[in-house]
Length: 150
Image (cartoon, rainbow, N blue to C red):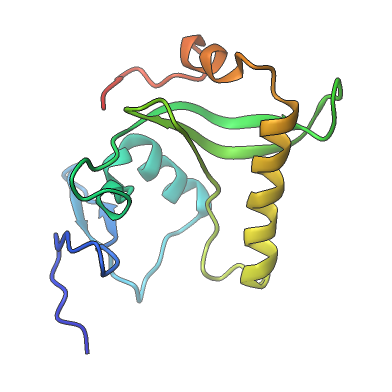
């Protein structure tokens, strides 16, 4: 039995999940109802990067993220056009990139396939993105949210 409460920031336990309420605020997630779509969860993550648990990586200096791109193309090879797209690209306050791919729990694919997909995306991005790709994303008005914050 878990004694975890909403807002618990203990890095040894997963944090709570939130949804956007009618008032625009974040409310604890009701697991019985789930999200209507992956797009809904993608928008929540884009609008509220604080949902990403930066304290799990370093409790002394929790990661803070800035969204620099959504649906960012990833080529399948050097000089090739984009083969895939990653849902979100964030950078943290140390300029370390974080790639986010959103999947609903009702997605029937096994977890191994989904994790493999993300590893393939990250490997191809590292290998085939130009050296300045993250800088291009951060500077692009079409990729950058209107409100920038860490």
